[in-house]
Amino acid sequence: MTGSQLDPGRTAEAAVARPRRRWAALGVLAAALAMIVLDGTIVGVALPRIIDDLDLHLTEAQWVNSLYAMVFAALLLASGRLGDRLGRRLMLIVGIVIFVAGSVLAGAAGSGDTLIAARAFQGVGGALVLPATLSTVNATFRGRDRATAFGIWGAVMAGTAAIGPLLGGWLTTIADWRWIFYVNVPLGLAVLAGALLVVPESKGEKGGRGLDVDGLLTSAIGMALVVFGLIEATALGWWTPKTDFTLWGLTWPQTWPVSPVPAAILLGLVFLALFVRWELHRARVQRSALLDLTLFRVPTFSWGNLTAMAVAAGEFALVFVLPLYLVNALGMSIMRAGIVLSAMAFGAFVAGSTARHLAERWSPSTVVVGGLVLELLGLAALALTTRPDLSTWWLVLPLVVYGVGLGLASAQLTSTVLRDVPPEQSGSASATQSTVRQVGSAVGSALAGTSLAAALAWVLPGRLADVPGLPAGQADQLQQSVIDSAGGVIPLVRSGGGPFAHLGDSAPAVAQTLADGFGQATGIAVALAAGFLVLGLLGAVRVAVVARRSA
Image (cartoon, rainbow, N blue to C red; front, top):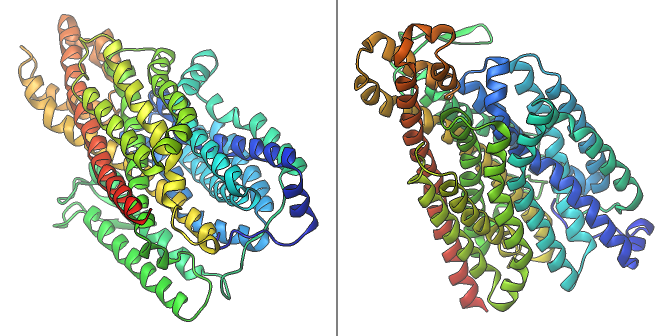
């Protein structure tokens, strides 16, 4: 997405000339955006059921969440470029078809590998849809209408992401977890029909010769290796190998002095450095580049993107870990957990609808700062209340505060990031911001699972040692079972059934100990999410300072 200008053509001109059609097109684009953003968060609350049904380990569960965001991020810039060249509505239609096909495959998955592969397929479709929606909004609206359209776009992104857990809980309860994917079929068909009827076709400036295939490969490989290392660290070991690792017939043995994890992360960073060097070279020889690095000379853009990545990382870290705690440690039903998590959606929708008016009174950057402060307060309170003996209201209230902050920050973040970007570069800037958000989503989910596992390994040994009559060997087995299943064995221990029948009368006490430990570990993971937001707040404050100086 390197350009924001409409090609002179009958379709685009007709769209601009008819205000009603423009707003109808915005409704279709918002529905397409909602569908793909929803899929990033709807899975979380159903994850405990998916883990149990498909017998997933924690690492596989992390991949179910992270691979979607990772593929999404890797392809966003390239798909935006294709939309500029071939037509944004065309990319929107192709993306919807691929996304719906991936949803059908995910719903029919009979194993973890199949589900993970289907999520990657969904990520390809989502990567085609997202930049097409934002670029079309950017190309179709002008002046005050553009500000309103961007506000609606941001509010839909924040609100839909927050409502995902409620919808996921409802579908899993009344039908089956597979319907969190099957629901995309009727939604996708409706959006497809709307795109064909009211969305105008538009293209952008070509921005140089050729297609940046090398840039796509180096960025995708680099991202894949870094996220692989973050996710697999729990199973393979951060430094010392825990087990043999085999890939494509090649084995990294446990006897080697270093785990494949640091090697993967280091190699990934090397590829990302090569990507930056290659993009600079492409720009120097005036050939098409995926990433316009000159954009980062704009202070509000560079600091704003830091904020966007941190907000996404914090949100997806929370959405990954909290459902596991509610269902497995607190023993909530999937539906009740969804209702609790919908407190975020309530706050986000209320705040999102008022963010534009607050921005007019103060400024978008000030609203973003205020939103991040509220998000931090909500997460700080939540990190201190993840104990099974507290009322559900002590979970709901911090989530409402967090949701209000999320709605304020997300609704104004896009306009803040693009504030000082030249109009001819707005398409490329929009693509970069979307990519940064998806990178944050993937990293947030990956680090949430890794930090949860590390916290459990730190917390549980001491707690289990205090359980009278529990042999050390059984304690070690319980601890590993809780980590591998992301807490999924706790309800089974509580019931004293299956492989835990030997615990007898001590089963309730052991289960309570595990639930307490899981709550403490969840608090640590939530604190990590808060750490991301601290970083984002620093970026947002810097944006506000720069914006005030240039006003």
